[in-house]
Image (tube, rainbow, N blue to C red; front, side, top):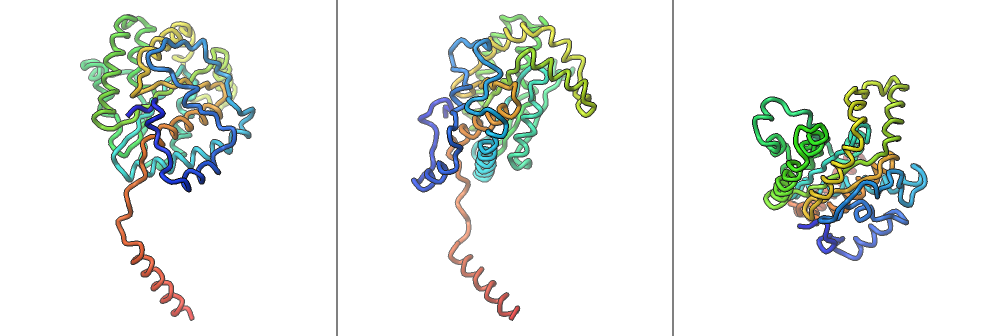
Amino acid sequence: MSICDARCITFPSTEADAASQERTRPAGDLDLFDHCLVRPGARFTLDNVDPEFCGVYDSPEAAQPAIRFYRRQLDRLHHAMREEDTHSVLVVLQGVGASGKTGVVRHLLSSVDPAGCRVVAFRQPNHQHLRHDFLWRVHSQVPQRGEMAIFHRSHYEDVLAVRVHRMVSADSCRQRFDLINQFEHLLGAENRTTVLKFLLHISKEEQLARFERRLDDPERRWKISEAHYREHEYWDDYMAAFDDMLSGTSTVEAPWFVIPSNHKWFRDLAVLRIIVRAMEGLGTRGPAPAVDFARIRRKYHELEAESEAKAS
């Protein structure tokens, strides 16, 4: 199923369902799916993305009704996917240090049943990982049917950091793009996994501002990392690597979305909105009830009458 093809999006099955959803859908809602999508096959550059973009919203308060709406929608769709147990969702989060990956993880986990959602943080590969192909450690972590998995960084580190630090050549990284595309196609074809990839895009100035806030706020100092400061010096190299990655690995089956992330509240809304749009396209409605409702209703009324009789 192509999640980039609007023809595959499944809408409510009845006019009543559709009318009910439209009554509660936020007014002036912007289709962030299309706005943030990296078009498969097209050359992409982050220079064309304004990290300050906030859509139709001018403040966090103005966005709160939409955030609440899409959190409810995500919870409903996630529950239906778990119960139906035929699809899975993989959310991939990439971005420079302090771009908000952990914040998005927290926001998503607070919007769904954590029992059906798993977070995987990919660190530097260990000795065992390095004795295998670069995708070996990733495959065992993808979601099973009925599950959502969130990758906090991912297999894409093997075409980003290794390229920036010249451990792997740019040409070799581009060859890895084909392997990644085949891997993600396999997930969809064999396990009905919807892959949604998000690059959280902040400006160079915003990254430094966040570093400063961490220095000034004792409760944030645990986030301080010398590696972040070292990597900041390679900003232009990372932007070039991101451009190649986005252009080479945004596919119909597993698209990239670039999220303007200077404003955290808009970042969270955009990621929510896109995941909900994609999961609506799965058409999951949960399994049919396994009980005879008429009989259960009669049993309920019998118990109710018995309880009232005893009380009187």
